[in-house]
Image (cartoon, rainbow, N blue to C red; front, side):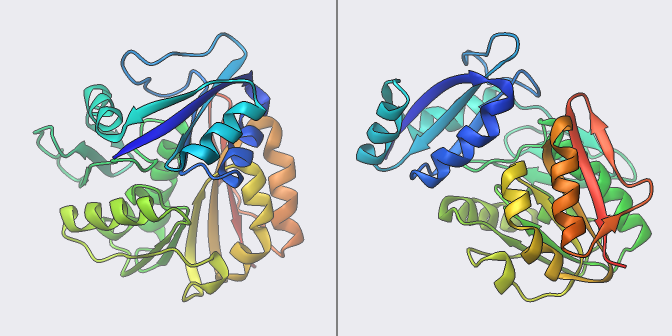
Length: 283
């Protein structure tokens, strides 16, 4: 089965808004190449201060319309080629207490760590990008402090964070995503890891809360839109870890969650270069 892609060159600070718009216009997945993380071998990379937003479409007409509005060409991309090129660029990672091992690489799990075997397929989430690695490190710390926490992973993608939470000891883990491809891949990865995680496409507000810990590694503007729904899912004393945030966007995101009744968790924020993770709690 073929898909189609459109690549848009934008100012780095505009990349998240463009990515969100493309999702609304029918993209089945979006990749932002901003010079961070591990680049796909042979993939075009952005110039300094720029970002490339690559959108994939399963519907050619929707893709052509979205590409045409931005003055770029739509290219046909076989799904298998995309997946195989990612395989060439991934290696095992150690983040917090989590050892992320691509399924096609043989490697021994370091002592004291939990292994997550991953095959990302067409879903976002490999652990290589700072937004994901920030979440994994923070997740490890939170589950050390509250090992019996009920966890919700918003926008689960490949299921990496949700599976890691289960491996770290969370007794109940739920992951949601509005992309049916992501749900399929996440379910396959959970089976690959021998864990039970509930994945579905229902909205955040429809999930079976409340939860002690919510993970949300998505676009900053989407984090703001979902603030009331995410905050409503937190149990008293619960914590939400918000990632996918550029440093200049921190105040906007923090304000959205404060307006929903949450407060910053002392010592909970993390940063990696220009990327931030914010930790908020329900009093």
